[in-house]
Amino acid sequence: MTLKNIEGIKNIIFDLGNVIIDLDTEATKQDFKFLYGPDYEEVMADLKERNVFKKFETGSISTQTFLNELASYDDNITFDEIKNAWSAMLLDIPEENYKILKKTKENYKTFCLSNTNKLHIDFIYKQLKSTKGVTNLNGFFEKVYLSHEVGKRKPNEDIFQLVLDNHNLVPSETLFIDDIKKHLVGAEKLGIRTLHMDEDMRLSDIFN
Image 1: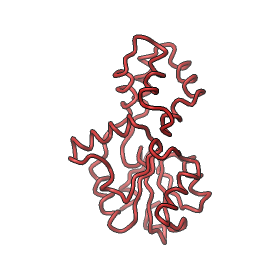
Image 2: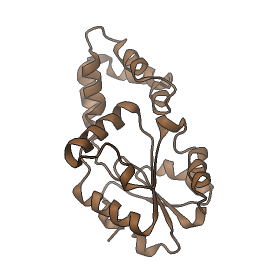
Image 3: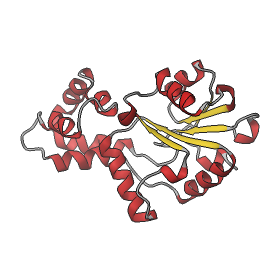
Image 4: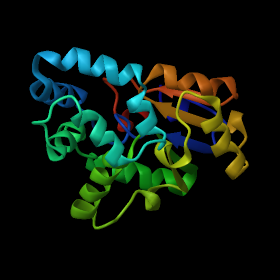
């Protein structure tokens, strides 16, 4: 599906990971497997059961608390090792995506809506500073919504409602693009139109 096939769209909400920036989640998994060794599965299960990742993603725990949690399983693991493993999944923003975002912003109201966390966004912004000379993503969108800043996360309806309300957007005139199908559910319940960007797709496939 391309944007040309979708009529009546005035607003576009973009996910960040695997839509704008390329990810390699397996890299983070392998790094943590190396750090935790045979205890890896047990450690991850415990962290998920205690919602440590979700809490970090919604800003309800600080970066330091998050690092303390992950370091608590092994006294030999350093904070730097955890930071490096955690951010190993973050690759580059393809040059063509910058061009697409700039062009799209000229014709639509555009927004970024991401489930992310302080460590990841700091890493991305540092990368942006070194490659593009900009300190954040604000120049590419009307507004950027990050889960750890707003205290809400996809697929819950409230984070989509926040964007709609803040900018007086009509759901049927709004398109949400995400690579994770379950994240589309909350948007669809509010009448927002959605596009699932599967692993074989690039932004250029949609905006051609």
